[in-house]
Structures are given as C-alpha cells and as structure tokens.
Image 1: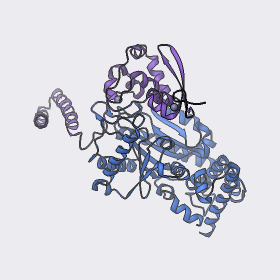
Image 2 (image 1 turned 180 degrees about the vertical axis):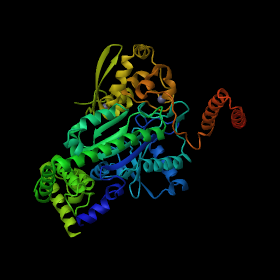
Image 3 (image 1 turned 30 degrees about the vertical axis):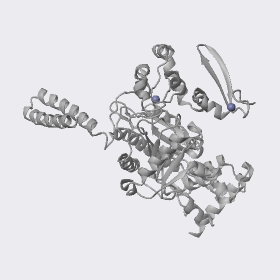
Image 4 (image 1 turned 90 degrees about the vertical axis):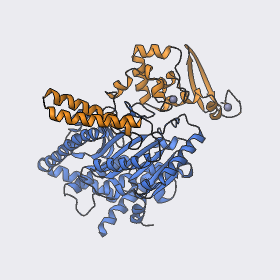
Length: 355
Length: 172
Ligand SMILES: [Zn+2]
Ligand SMILES: [Zn+2]
C-alpha cells in the first residue's frame, strides 16, 4: 500500500481535516464521564459485571436515537492486537489506561470523531475530537450522544453533586474540555513559561502532549479545565474559550515579531529543519517532533510553500511506534524505528512534490 | 517468588497492609489477590497519582483522619470502606458518595472549589430535578421584583411558580 493510501485509511478525520484557527489550534476535544446506577465502578466490578455493562451499552448504541448520530463499531480490547491498541492510543481515541483495564472496549464512530470508552475508570467516557478550534461543536456532539444514550441507560446523577464519577475530581459535569495548541513562537520568544503559569491560576491545567511542562515536544500544549463541579458546561467552555483566544492572539503576535525582528534567523531555522526531514536517514522521535514543529511554523509563516499544513499532526501521529509498526508490518527495535521514521518522513515530503 | 497463599503460581501482586499500626507484606498471585478483595484495592494504590493528592488532602484534615480511624464506615452497595477510599482516591460505586458523605466533609469543596452542581441535568430522568431548579430560580427572581416594587411582573412570576408547584406535586 502506498503511504498516502495508508495515511488516508489509517488516520482519523481530525488528523486529515482542517478546522477554524488550525494554524495554531490543532484539535479540540470534549470528554464526559457517565456511570450507570447501582453498578460498581470498573475498579471493583467483576469480569461478569463488566461484560453485562458492555452488553447493556452495546444495546443502547443500537437504539434509533444513537444510530441517527452515525454508524458505530464496538471494539473489545481483548480482541485487538497490541499494535492495533497502540494505534488507537496514538490517535487519541482511547487512553493508555483502557489498555490495562480488564474488559475494556471502545465504541467508535466511522469517522473516529466520536469514541466511547467502556469500563475504563468510569463505566463510560464519551469523547468528541475535532480538528482546529471547535470546542462548542465538540460539546454539542458529545451532548447529543449523551442524551441519546440516556434514552435507554440510567445514569447516576445526584441533585447537588451532579453526575457521579469514580474519582471525585470528575464529579459534577464529569466533563474535560481541552484544546491542543501549537505554540512555537511563544516558546522561541521565551514567553511560554509566563503564559502557562498564568493559565494555571485561572483554574485551567496545561500539559505537553508529548513530554511535560515547557519542554513539551513539538511545542504542542494541551489546555483543559480542572474544575468539574460548581460550573456549568457552558461556563467551563466559556472560560477555556476566553483563555484559548488570548493565547492564540499572543502566539500570532509572537509570530509577527519573529518575522519582523529575526527574519533570517527564523528562515534559517525552518529551512534547516525541512532539509533534515527531507534527507535524514535516521531520526529519533524527539528530534522529529522539533523539526516538524519548525516546518509547520515555516508553512504558517509562508516561508515554506507547497507543503500541506496538516503535515505536523499527521506525522506526529504516524511516526509513533504503533503506527510505524503498522505501516512497515513488523515489530522493531528503537534504532530500527529511527531509520524507518526517517524513511517515512522523506516519503511523506516527496508526496507533496507531486501535488 | 511463589504465591504465599496457594504456593502454586508466581507472586505478581505485592503490597503492604497496615492494620492498627501493624505492617504486613503480602506476595500473592493474581487469582489469590483477587480473592483477597482487599489486596486488589491496595495493589492499585501505586498506579494512580491523583489519589496521593486526594489522600493527602484527607490526611491533612485532622477531623478526617479521626473519622478515618474510627470503626470503618463501609458502602453497603460495593463494600468499599472509607479507609480504602482514602488510600485509593477512587470510589467503588455511585452509592459511595452517599455512604461516605459524613467522612468526606468538605473534600469536594476543596478539590473542586464548590460542592453544588449547576450544570447539565439528565434529559429523561432529571425532569423533576430540572423543575425544582427552575422553581428556585423563579422564586429568587420574584423576590427581586418585589424589592424593586415591580409588582406586576412579580405577580406573573408567582403564577408561574404556582403552576410549576402543582405540576411537581402531581408527579410526586
Ligand atoms: Zn495464589
Ligand atoms: Zn460503593
């Protein structure tokens, strides 16, 4: 199979499509936790309990209200190979914790924009993941799925505590909303630390997508709400929205500054990185992420032309271990992986030449 | 190392149990660990990080420590004790919230900054709750109108409150 066929078959819609503000906001995600009444949470549930929960949820998905939202497929973790599971994690469709949970499963919509983890920490974790800045859209979609499932499932709900969850840090709305942002100019201009610490002071959490804190690989940061009780869904999303908008503005400002006050430097940096990705024969994931970030910045600033901006998110996922193994069809040691990663990068950049 | 309990399978679950200051170590195979219910909870303690934060909060609160030290309160539905919750930082089932409401004290408020849900209500099962929330909102609004001496609007609100109250009573 050619690389372009492989990528279009193997990647989720959020990885292929663009969205609003996608020069900075890579993706928007809303996840909500729901639990059924009277059943133990998965941590204490027996194998049989978990199977019966899964049966009940699978039946609920067959209901017309849910089917109206699209075609869904149920994948049991126990039926998947290690590589298949790894790829689901790399596409951000399931959490690594689901791999360790006995009796775990995921219900996926065809386009992979919607996924429901079953028997993770909570009975259900509904997720909508969209490209670019679409927090409202993601919440609306998850909300509709929640209503449709609630037609036949009895969710644990308390008038004062809201939706009851296994961990008290999720109780209330049970909702985590997050945006993944590419912030290379804020990192290059040294403003990132100040901005991130400000963010944590307003009840939001920041983490690197790969790696922690300001050393986030690929300059990718995820900003999410910490509080789930005492604020409505609209307030949570509104807060996150307000902060995300400001960060987008700061990043845009910093990019203009780089172009104005250090044009040669920034051109050299992104073109050098492009050269390395186009010709390297082996590259580790850390360097690959940094070079991809530079190239993406180069594309956004108009320095690199004729390369699609999607290359960052597509390759940041496609060069993870599970994806590499899936594409090349065999397990490999880390140093072989570095060689294959470089080869996949070169091939992907050549695809662009033909366009 | 072989499992201490059955002596047949390799011990893969290792944990320390502290009961009344007495520390004992266990090395069990998975199936014996599962049988020894307690073991399963304890073995999981290491896997989380939020729990440490939570149990830190619980232990910082002297009244919570006292309560946690008192004869264990236990959730009738799932069997989890409050001490186990304090260690794991996870509830065993939805009923735990009610079962441990006394011991939890203001934990939720400290973790979450509030202890009152103001967000979504389940569409199908939450009808009554939604009506009650609407009722209290209308009452507040009515009082404000009275204070502002906008009596006509207050009277309209009063009528809506009455009809909502009747609706709620007929459902109860
Ligand atoms: Zn044994
Ligand atoms: Zn319980």
